[in-house]
Amino acid sequence: MVIFISIVWLLVGFVALIKGADFFVDGSASVARTLKVPGVIIGLTIVAMGTSAPELAVSVSAALSGSNAIAVSNVVGSNIFNLLMVLGVCALMKPLPVDRGIQKRDYPISLGATVLVVLLAGDLVLSGRSRNLRDGMAPAGMLFRWNGLVLFVVFIAYLALTIYIAKKSRTEEDEEEPLPMWQSVLYILGGLVAIVIGGQLVVDNAKRLALALGMSETLVGLTIVAIGTSLPELVTSVVASLKGQNGMAVGNVVGSNIFNLLLILGVSSFVHPIQISVHSFVDLGLLLGVSLIAYGLIATGREISRIEGGVLVAMYAAYTAYAIIR
Image 1 (cartoon, one colour):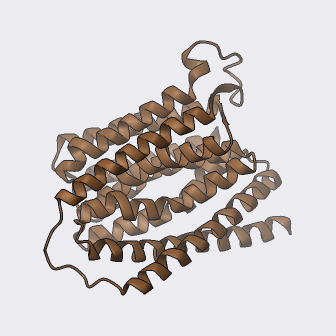
Image 2 (cartoon, helix red, strand yellow; image 1 turned 180 degrees about the horizontal axis):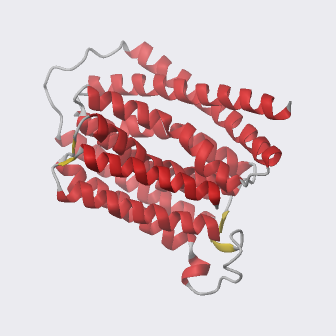
């Protein structure tokens, strides 16, 4: 009975997260259209922040409640899902062109953010001070409050750079008619409320399920929570790709990953220092490897082909199997 009730509330939380993010994105994108910002910039900022709001709500709620494993694994699992499943599914449906600015600027920043988190989170392993490495739950490092502040400052610098580029890239092309400002604000505020409530429901009931089923919080964060909170990225990018808004589709993935690593882990670790287990550090290493593979596809070609998309999806299936077996 406890499992059934937890599943029901977990689903309610996911619905609130997804619909809240949907309204948040619609309202924010409408404001951006009023400012005549190009689609790729919208994807990197407004849409990425909106679709990353579920991860922010879940990870901060988890940090406040002391569930650090969920806070970290949710970000790592979401980023891997974005790179493998979101890009893969979009490319499978339609070859996915990649904006040159993302190739040369934004994706390298995302890759650098991943390296920075690995260096900060793995201080014990990288310095050779960690013991009992065979124990997956042994401490591999810690994200302290000052680490969170560093990540947050880097995020603000990236956001300032993106806004500067947006101001230089304003376009006078006709776009979809924006919503009235009052409606945009209502969508933004209502979406944020739904996201916060949904995030709390997901964290609470994911923990109950983990306890009832004998699953670790890390596994729950890497699979159920990460996939559920990444659905907004998947839906948004697929719809954008089908509508020919490729800059928004890829920008959403890259921007979301940057926000997850810098803003979400930064805020979460500043709210409550996060202990990094060996398993979590290994997952960060896998994220770095996946990021390098995806960068190879993005940097060396004009588009991600259907075959390459299929390879990315197959890699995610293999990763999920590894996470479950482990």
